[in-house]
Each structure stands twice: as structure tokens, then as C-alpha cells.
Length: 253
Image 1 (cartoon, rainbow, N blue to C red):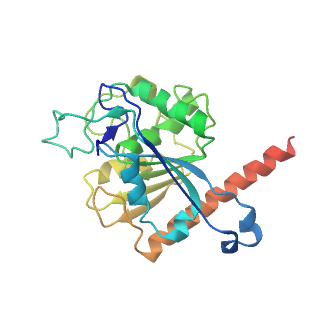
Image 2 (image 1 turned 60 degrees about the horizontal axis):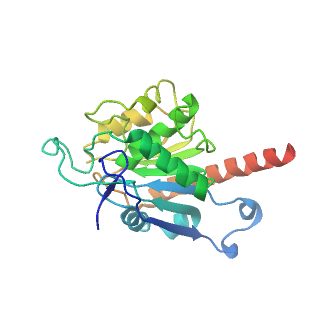
Image 3 (image 1 turned 180 degrees about the vertical axis):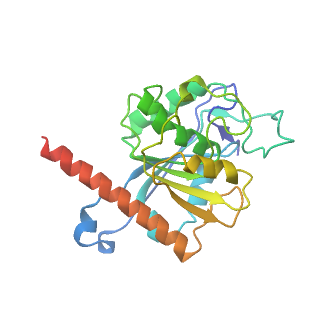
């Protein structure tokens, strides 16, 4: 399968879109839980992978987590072909120039308009770079101004744009100039070459939730009960926030 990129290569192409909706049946919930809707999340994959690959990896999470999420997996708009000049120094999954960055943002915004509204973003690797910068860009009015502001983030193996080596795209300038007040869940691998960058990124958010796992630059399977509990607690908080916002909106009608 041809891998895709978000701001990476020059030739634009419409990627395949895959969707996974994992919802609990009514008998899984009772009382207040039954009135809380599932958050709708747009998922952005890493460099030289695809929406289907990310879907397969996230699909290994426990059903107790997935059943309360509405996940939509999008392919990046640019096919990732050829070799990067810095692959001999850095993991090839992360090396990509930020050409076509604005076109990439327009592509994502258009998808969100047609298929949303989305509550939050989940990003892995390059997709995490992009996801992490979006709340700050929305706040400054430099990107995704035609869709509702992102309410939360799930960042897996992320870092601040420009990441390791490349210049910062104009739209992303100042995205982290002040603490990001967006609920965030960060996964940081102890053997990930981006561990330090991921920790710096997490500190850019107000009260981030951070899970340190024992693997490298990958998506953890949430194999420990402790990890599963933290993730469940985070999404329960998000569902409550969405419920409170919905109630406030109805009261103003």
C-alpha cells in the first residue's frame, strides 16, 4: 500500500478515507453515562503510512476504550515517494519537508466541514506534529477557521512543528507561544527517538495527561490496566465536557 504524508511531498492526490465507528450498545451504559455522547475524533496518521494502517493499530486498543469513541481515519493528501535527504540521520517515518503545508490544512479543513463536526484530533508521529499545532493555529486565526475549535487532542509520538530539522511553516508560527489550553493526552515511548521532544511538547499544554510506555516510536496497545484506566478516565472527562457544553448551548436557545 502506498504510504501518504500530510505536509510532505509535492504531488497532491486524494487519499482513500476509512472510518471506524466503535460504539457501545445501550446495555453497556446506565444513569448519567447513558446521556453522554461519544466524542467524534479525526485521526491523522504518520509519514509513509495510511489511514487504514492507523486504524488497524488503534483497533488493537481494548474494546472498553474503543466502544465509547467515534473514530474517523483520514489519509494524508500527498503520496510519500522517494527518499528524504536526512533519512540517514533520522527515522524515515518522521523526515519530511513542510512543503504544501497550507494545502494540507485546507484539505483537512474541507474534510472536517464535509464530515464533521469533529470534537477532537488523534495524531501519530507526523500526524501528531500537525494535531498538536492546530489548537494554537486556530486560536491565532491562521488555520482551520471555518470549523469549530478542537476541544481535545490525543498525541502519540509527537513533537512541536518543525519537529527535528525543518523550518517552521508560516501558519504554525506562534502556535505554542502561550500555554495551550486544550485537554490533551500524550503517549511517550521510553525507547522513542522523539521521547525528549514529546516531553517538551506535553509541557506546552495546560495540565496534560501523559502516559509513558515501554516501547519505541509506535502506538502502544494499552496492555496494562493502568494505561487503560488513564485513557478511560481521560475520555470520560471529555464526554462530560461535551455534555456540559451541549447543555449550555441548549439553555441559550
